[in-house]
Every structure is written in structure tokens, then in C-alpha cells.
Image (tube, rainbow, N blue to C red; front, side, top):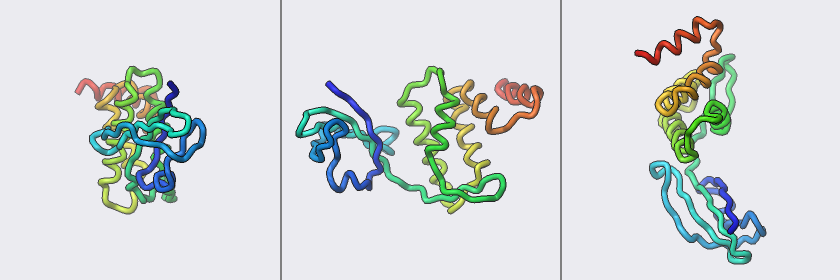
Length: 167
């Protein structure tokens, strides 16, 4: 049996016009199973194409953040959760962390950023949130992310960060 996973915002156009099968592009599918994941923040739907009978999963999440990110040079860009995901996944490369835990981590980071309730957030604030969540999940990934985020200028500053784990 074929399998596939796709992420869509809950308010996506695809949901309004019918879910399109990723295998045969038919736009009529039925939901076989539906359950909440990541503490109810994401809905996983198992679907079956009514034409080719292939099954696939969609993950639907509410799109909440309309947020500006203030960079170090004071320029502003639109918030892009994919940038955070790339950095987190890079830090977690070859670490024994399940995909479910990664998805939960990303959801928790997104939730904390969204609960900010301000129209802007700095890259520094985002970095602190990511570091806090990564430290709870995997210390090696935390150090990897911190080494890029904090731009250690010397071995001593790197050692100081590692020593903070003993406290």
C-alpha cells in the first residue's frame, strides 16, 4: 500500500475544493481516520482516494502568526516558521529523536512565539525560545544550535556554555 504525508493549513484552498490525491491527482477523497496530535494543535487525517484507493495522511494546523521579525540590523521580515524548522532539524541531525518529538518541539516553539501577543518579535527572542526548548529535548542539539545562534568567538566562550550544563 502506498503512503504519503502532506501538511496543509486548516483554512487551505485544497480543503475547500476537495483534497487532491498526491498519486493520481483526483480531487475526491474520503477521511478514513482523524485524530489530534501535538497536544491538539495539529489534526492528522488519514485519507483514501476514491479513484485509485491510495491512502495518505494530511496534517492540518491553524495558521495563527501574522508577525514581523526584527533582525539584528533592525530590518523587518515576515515570520517564517520554516526557517526555524531548518535550523532545528540541522541541530538534530543524526540525534536519536523521533519525528513525533520533533513535530511536538516545533509546535511548542510556534505556540510560544504566537503567545507573544505583540505584532513584532526579535530574532534574539526567537533564538532564546528555540534554545530553551532544544535544551529540554536534547543537549547535543542545544549546543549545536547555540554554537550558530550565539556565534561563539572563542573556545573559552564555548566552554563557558558547556559548563552551564553542570549547574
